[in-house]
Length: 119
Image (cartoon, rainbow, N blue to C red; front, side, top):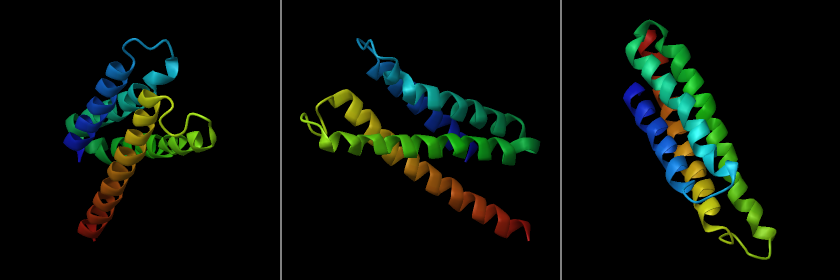
């Protein structure tokens, strides 16, 4: 899971950078802001195995924040422009919703498997 965490963190950082090209909004950097602590946690979990549990739990906290932040996608339903009135924002929010949810589920499954192997 540590390598997946590093990859997911990098994905969010790169996504935030790419989506922010030409944007004057700081909110376009939100994926990168969430990806940085996930990436760092993944690196620390990989290189400091004695503290792997704490770093992976920290990573999943930020993944849950990504997932929850992705629900902002549905806030545009009530606007005149609709869901894709701001396409870059909408796609980023949808990406956070989906990838944050998938990564969180994978982490929870990994945590459960690790607990079963401890006993």
